[in-house]
Image (cartoon, rainbow, N blue to C red; front, top):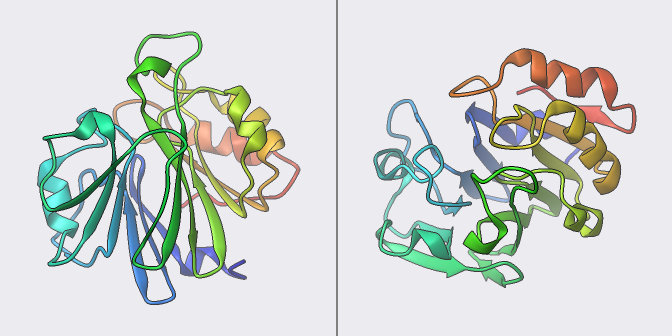
Length: 206
């Protein structure tokens, strides 16, 4: 596992992160990207809502040869080298091992299980990363193993910060990173709640 996660992971906005390791750059759910870095080797898209699948922002990080791994619900909405996935699929793209895992709501209607939206577990430079996507606290999280876990904290459309603490306990990652706040819904207070209440490892607010 990376000894300094901050050196490899940068949160750009909402659920949009940039990961770099082993000479590979991975983005998740590009949204409100500043500038046009055009440096993505791999882009992971969890579902087709506008704040996760933004063609404008995807174009800002795409370069020639960028591979896009996206939930099947994104069919026809992204262009380029696209690999559509469903829950349970595994693949290797540009040396990055990727697994699509469940992401859904249990007590709200925004992300129904039947829609097939996903999170991802991927291995970059020997570090195993869980990007939860838009999800509630779900039983399948007990089956996730990761060094770094990125968990939503804002409530309303996803799990709350309190539920994120419970999710972190199920996953037992060494480093937990809050996401899905600071834009549209959720505030820094939600991220701080996770930091204050998760005693099982390190919480990084990026």
